[in-house]
Image (tube, rainbow, N blue to C red; front, side, top):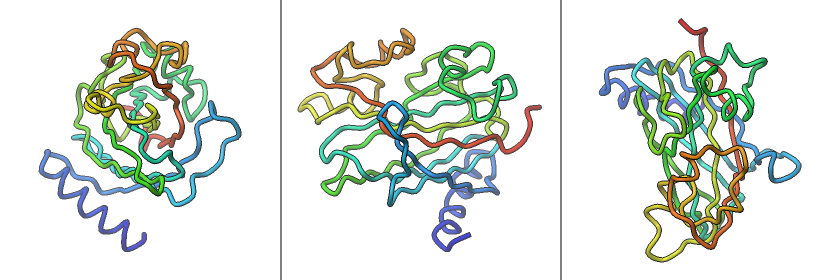
Length: 213
């Protein structure tokens, strides 16, 4: 474990211990371009780390290769019963089409505007329970046993007066036509329409740390 990762682990452990849990494992995974954007490739200069505890999760999301000045939201997809997926990792079809079976949910856990160099940084804690702007209402139930994906959603150029929803809802500022067909009604109602095009541009996957109870 690198010095940076050790320092990050210490910060996570302290944060989650204050919430009633303790993170003893920090994992990193490769951030990649989203399959909807063409050939998948690793995002150079990116770093994503995740720590889980019985109280929740702490994530550290550092991205690159983005459009300067664009607004982005970070979606967290949770599969509380990954054993019900035909194979691991679970797929978008499992998350969006089999939610009642895999007890999946998706929420907006952060947002930021890409810097002039195309980088972006979002960090946060998500406690067990309901997710912000949730798609299905299943929430985060048992973090160490869950499969967790992070997906970066591009809302297009920042629109003056609409930044709160562009950084805190699924579709704030975007046209209906730009939303993928499988998205449920709750996702389409998360934010108001606008002139921009929403695109899922990057994603990363973390497999369960242990079997479900």
